[in-house]
Length: 158
Ligand code: ADP
Image (cartoon, rainbow, N blue to C red):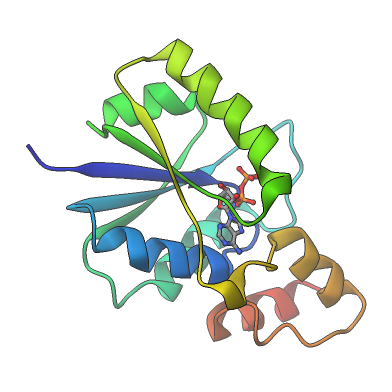
């Protein structure tokens, strides 16, 4: 059976931290699906099309990934994709409480899907999409936090 993992998130924008995790995960699974949440109630900085294109363009060198959007329950999306694993990233202890709760809820909703946590390389542990947006809005240099196509896309947007 092929091992398929879903890595869900807003990816608003995708950062070097996300990419580090995806590269590590793609060595462990046959396919990693980057599932970008399309939540009309949660406003995003980038449109869903920009987030999809941005992630696809940033990951062209990894051939075992797919980039998709979804607007359903995560466990339902995982089931439609035949994924057995939900992958989430842990940067610091502060991520733990929310992630623990989320994985518990998802396990309750579908006990057949496991959540796995991975940590990024140390140099990426402080990167978050929200901090990247904040630094960008204040005119700071974001080039070490995001790939070049995303830096260009973000600069276009402000
Ligand atoms: P969400 O809005 O669902 O938290 P994000 O796009 O912010 O979506 O993050 C998706 C996942 O990636 C989450 O599990 C988050 O903890 C993880 N993540 C975010 N930034 C990093 C990073 N720098 N290193 C490793 N994992 C990260």
